[in-house]
Length: 357
Image (spheres, rainbow, N blue to C red):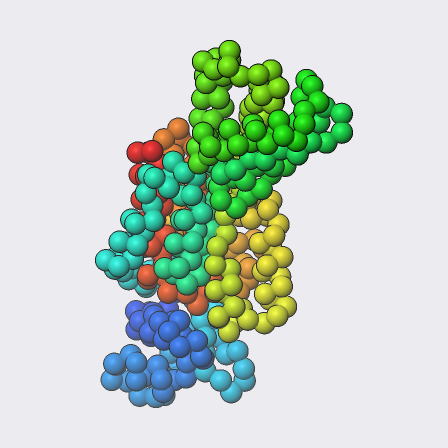
C-alpha cells in the first residue's frame, strides 16, 4: 500500500544503508508509540538484531549525521527529525488496512441521508477526529448543500425585516430584508411558522423551488402580506448559497493530549492558525488537485506554526467534478501506518456517497 508524500527526499546519496534504515524504522515506531527519546539499549532490544551496543551507537551516530535523528537534550536518547519522518513515510512504513471497526464506523456516518440533510461534512470531520484521535478537517467546496433548520422574522423600522436563519444544525445567519409593505410581528410570525412547518430540514435550493411552486398553487388563498414576506424571504435564501470557501474543523482539543504540542504558546499559535480561514484554505488547496494522499511534515506545510505538526490530506471528488479535501492534523509523532489509510478510505467513501446523493 503506497501513498504520495508531500515532498520526497531529494538527495538519495544521503540515504543510510539497509541496516541503518531498518534501525531508523524501529526507532521511529518506538518513538511514535512511547513519545520519549530512544536510547541505544532500547533500540538494540527492540530491533531483535544480534549487534553489539557499540555497533548500535555507531549506526545511531550515522543516522544523526544524515540529519534523520537528533538528541533533544545533551544526555538523552534520540528522536526523529522531520527528514527522518519523511524517509519513514516514503520508504519504510508498512501501511495497515483500516480495521473492521473503523470501516464500519465510517460507513455508518457517511450516509446519503446525512448528505441530503446537510450534516455529512460535519459528520466526516468529527468521524476522522474520533477514529484517529487527531484534529479532523474537511474543505467544503463551493456549492455545498445548505439545509434550513429554522427561520424567524423580526420587524425593524420602515419596511425592513430581520430574518434569522439556522442552517446545518449550528450556523446562524442574519439577513435584513426589504419588503414592499410594513408588516406586523404577528404577520411575520405566521409566515415563519408556515415555512418552518412545511419546509424545515430541506436544502435551501429545494426550498426556493418549492416555495415558488407552492405559491402559484395557493396564491388565491394566500393574503398579500404573506405573499410579500415569502417572496422576499425566498430572495434572501438565494443569497445564502455557501458559495464562499469554507472548512470544518473538529477535535482540535485532541492535540492537547500530545506532550510536544501541549505547550501553552504552541497551542496558542495552533489555535490562532485554525482561526485564520484564508490560511487554512490555502493549505488544504495544495492537495485539491492531487491524485491521492498527501503527507506534509513540519515545515513542508509552509507555516511556522505547524513546524511540530504533520498534515495528512486526500481529495474527494463530487459528481459535478468539483473537488474538496479532507484530512487530519496532528503531531509529527502520529501513527502514519494507521492514519494515512483511514484518511484515504474516508475520502473515497465520501466521494461515493456524494455521487450517489
